[in-house]
Image 1 (cartoon, chains in turn red, cyan, green):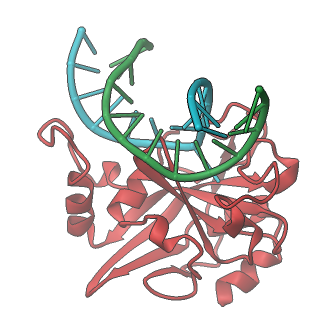
Image 2 (cartoon, rainbow, N blue to C red):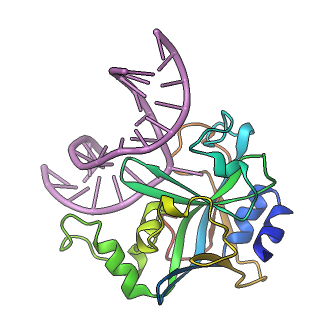
Amino acid sequence: MLFAKEIQNLETAQAAKFLLGQKLVRQIGKQLLVGKIVETEAYLGQKDIASHSYNGETPRNSVMFGPPGHAYVYSTYGMHYCFNVVTSSAGNGEAVLIRAVEPLEGMEIMRQNRQLFLKSPSRTVLDAHNLSSGPAKLCQALRIDKSLNGHNLANPPLRLELASKLAPKIVTTTRIGITQNRELPLRFYIKDSDYVSRK
DNA sequence: CGGGGGATTACCT
DNA sequence: GGTAATCCCCCGA
């Protein structure tokens, strides 16, 4: 509730910055997995051609057009999920992609969750910096999939928690992995964080 | 109803 | 740095 309120009064780019430093809390049975959000990107609805919602509402993106504070989870490349927080007001189709979190609790479980996706587990070192430093990696680590699409982030088993009202130092860059609207400064990360997908 | 592409990642050269 | 993996969705016909 708190978050929906805080978020809906912000422009989506501001919401993307506001989310930096806040906690993402995933509960699976008794397991508690907690990450601090360190990297985000804003997607600005039907005025942003890079956004899934640019062409209007479809079955895939319908959650983006719903109320803020809910999870928009989509699959890509046939094997990965990405997790977004719906922002702005219902009907606008705006959201913030969570691109990286810093593991705070449940790191060992996150490592196990990530391990399941590897083909040659001996090759890849799953240290803390490599557990959730990417939009699909954090979905693996926190076991986020399409079953959570549309979930209200005020409630378990996936919840946003206000961690700090003190704004961290933020670096602003262009967004990653898109082909349209590449020049817009809509990616944000916590300066000096060692847990971002890239600097 | 078929084809192309994707807000990525890991592994190999 | 190049590319396979892998499938859902959307668009155009």
